[in-house]
Amino acid sequence: MPLLFLHGGWGYGVYPFDNQIEQLQGEYRILIPDRSGYGRSTRVPEEMPLDFHNRAAAETVAVLDKLGIEKAVVWGHSDGSVIAAKMGLIAPQRCKCLILEAFHLLKRKPGSRGFFERFAARPEELGDETKKLLAADHGEDHWTSVLRRNCRVWFELADQVKQADEDLYEERLGELSVPTLFLHGRLDPRTEPGEMARVRNSVPQATMSFVENGKHCPHSEEEAWRETNRMATEFLRTQR
Image 1 (cartoon, one colour):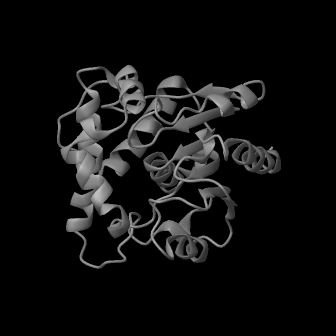
Image 2: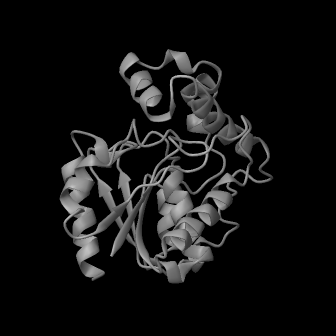
Image 3: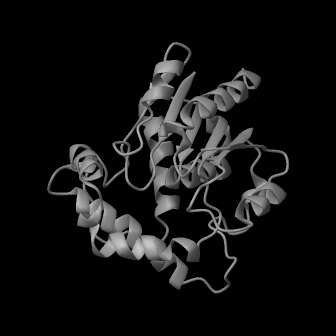
């Protein structure tokens, strides 16, 4: 069974899936594509369209088509989790199951507004090690564009909402029929108060697991990746 990892808005380099690949590669065929605009994939214009999650979901289904893959396990992180959920909505027959890590429900994230604005304007303020990882992933001449583009689109999304609680799924998340695990860091700074409770109410049939010491990327955090792997593998065993 193919296992498709989908990266977040900053790519794989900063948030690697190495620990998950090591544990799961004996049981799954691992696929880990760069979306358009990231890594070694085709570069895109500086401005990211507001419907970028929808476009990326369609692009990812096209990747499965190109590889001749009928169905895959899909594990998405952050923006990748939004894309994975949208795949589950538009092409549920292509998804064996979903792991949605560091999930986003809301378009408007007031608690993260300062974070997005800061790094959209000044990506060079990141730490040296993070900058090296981003440069290795996206290119020395391109990583700042990747950051600016992703951070900017999030406050642009917030600015165009008509209601503060408007979600990214046109109120369709409850239609998700694919077996799903929401895997979330209890300390995730990109999560708004009540956001995951609303997710739970919208998709009561899904499994929701919180990584106690996890922040925004439990799968690669030293204090959280083992618990993350345990929760993910327990879920995957139920889907065989």
